[in-house]
Length: 360
Ligand SMILES: Cc1ncc(COP(=O)(O)O)c(C=O)c1O
Figure (tube, rainbow, N blue to C red):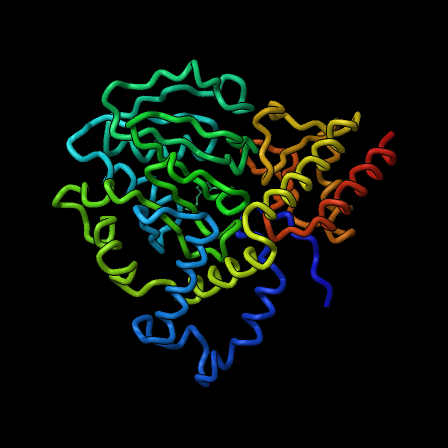
């Protein structure tokens, strides 16, 4: 069987060696005669898996000791609620930067719980950039500032994160975490749904600086309180054990390639060549401002949108799948996460050139 080149935005491609190892261990995990899905999350065998995954994740990000790592459920979407529930404390206002669909979704959810001050927005230019830092109107007394590190739909990514002094910086990193090194100490909270660069859907990883744990109000439901995850090692209820195990395999795979510095080299090379091919072409266009272009999600449009269907059909016949852009923006989008091999990007570039020639 041949595997196709998968440009899905998420759930996304997983590294082939990880899938093979999972397959090989599926029926008989470490000689136990059962799969890893069929054992207690509190038993020694699974605790080893859980602890090793956290240790490797910490190692990859060089996480300082004053940061907790929580393995949770509910996706990044649940963090849209948990962040205000846990960080507001006695405050009533939170700052949000609006750079696209996912920031907008986070803002909408936060508005149920607090006064949201939108510090800046790029909506008037169709979310094609990150608003310049000197235009952000920060409030004096915000509990935190929320940003979206990488807008998966719009393809807009931070390449440098701001220093905000004492206001905690919170970032939705769903589609960029572990794609490159990160200066974690700039952040109060980082969260990510796993289904792009970390593992399968069903797991959400949340990194919280320890002074931001324990601020939730007394009536906060137990499983929405970061303190409960800190006290229980993310085992206050049954965690998604198979997803946790797979994330652990993905962390080992990233380490085997040389960690995040090596990952960044590969990812920037993949992105640069794809953007160059789009920019050189007279047929394809990337709508995102050059300085803020994502390394992970690359949107592009055809000169004739009437050809979108044909483009996707021909791409599929070549084994290039899931290139359709999000329904809210149209066009195409190539998601080229860690597990999408460079050969996939090369094959896509070759296809773009051929398609353009054909249309000329
Ligand atoms: C940046 C970003 N934030 C949030 C979400 C929502 O994540 P989930 O479906 O895990 O709740 C996604 C999903 O694609 C995303 O890309």
